[in-house]
Length: 226
Image (cartoon, rainbow, N blue to C red):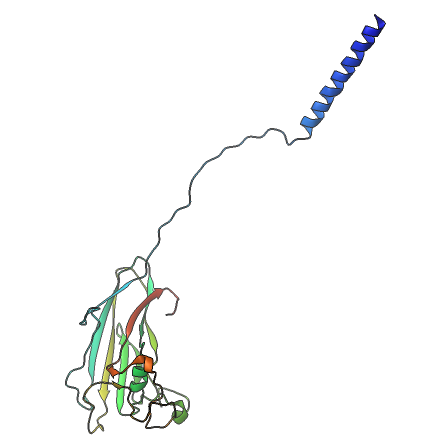
């Protein structure tokens, strides 16, 4: 009988020890806590930067033409544009054919050019010369070549319009104007960058040859440069 009681006592101690161990394990956890979960997703739409030119001819409505040019008689051509995208944008005019641009800038005092956008003057020169070796520092009072690009609108709102105008005249001292405006390449001496006043400053065969002054109207995100 004593043995049975003793056995039961040991069993009870073992059970208490076991329960005590269980209680200790439970107390070592962080315990229960409340929670509330909501589920969603991340989405979005993509805007657009787009400009639509108009007012000229051709497939892009951007071909402009001087007609019956005479020395000392300036003419102006204008192209219009609309922000047809969904976001505000900056707009630039870019003269993207470097050889044609250098041909214009080979005229020196035999050409006068102006550029304006939305009624604001951006450029004017009576000495279109890009040969720094013969001019020294460029300045509006001296040699002042037309640059590659100009910003013509800032932060233009969707649906808003603008325009850019280019004015040109051969100087009055021009005895025999060329048969077309801005023949490029301009020189017949090999088109080398020699800083010779009779030679064009820059020519690349990749630009081809032709007449006129190729340009692009470029829209960018605000504060971005083409």
